[in-house]
Length: 159
Image (cartoon, rainbow, N blue to C red; front, side, top):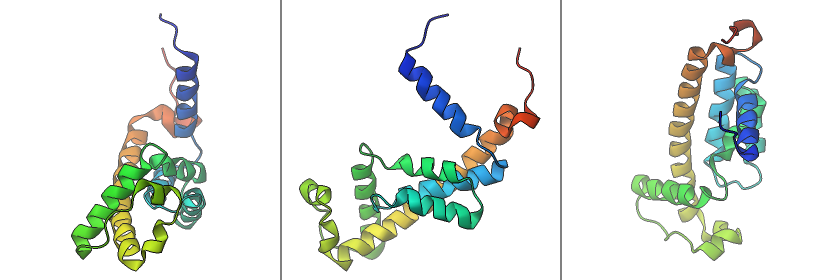
C-alpha cells in the first residue's frame, strides 16, 4: 500500500476526530449547522463565539459549532461576503457598491453605513440559513448511515 503524506494523514485524523464527537446525531448536526450559520457573517473574530453561544441555545455540539465557522476563512471570506451582499441587493434593491479590497482588509467597511450593512447582513442571514440547513441535514443523514460515527456503542468490528 502506498504511503500517505504525513500532512494528509494528520488532516484525516483531525477530520475523523471532529466527526466522532460526543452527543447524539441530532446534537452534532445542530452544532455544525449553527457554526456554519455564524460563519456566513462578517463578524471577524466573533464567529466562533457566536457559533458556540448558538450551540448552547440549540443544545448542539460546541466543538462542531466552532469548526463549522471555518466555512469562512482567508480563501472563502471575500467571495462569500460578496455573494451575500449581491443577494442582499437582489432582495432590498441597489445600494452602495461593494468596497475595494483595501477597505475590507482595514475593517473600515462598516463606515459605509446602513445601506451597505443591511444588504450584507440580510444576504448573510439568507445564505447562512440555507447553508446551515443543508450542512446540518447532510451531516445528520451521513451520521445515520455510518454506524462507526455514532460512537463506541454503535461500532461494529471492521474486517
